[in-house]
Length: 99
Image (cartoon, rainbow, N blue to C red; front, side, top):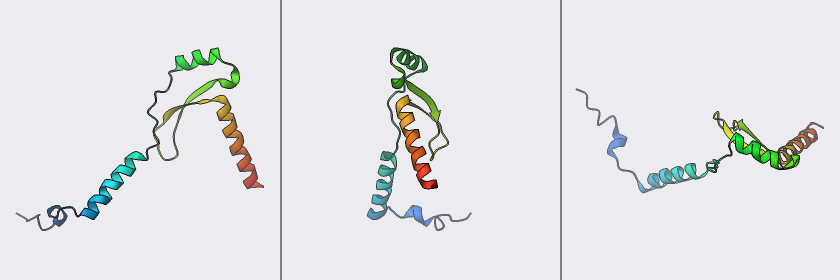
C-alpha cells in the first residue's frame, strides 16, 4: 500500500494565524457583499390590484431579470417612472459617447 500521508502534507499542518485570518475575512466579505434583497416581492395579483388603484405614472411593473454577474433570473419590481428615467439616462449617456 502507498503512504499518502507524505503526499498530502497540507493536511498535516495546522492553519497559521495569517491563513486563518485570510480565510475568515474572505468568507465574511464574500457573504456580506451579496446584493440580494430578502424582502418579499408582490405577487401578480397584488401588482394588478395596486396598479388598478393608482394613476398610470405610479404603476408597478414586475419581471424576471438576469443580473450581469449571474445566469439565475430574479423577479424585480419597479415603478414605471423609474424604468423610464433609467432608460432616458442610459439613452443620454449612450448618445454622448457615440457623438
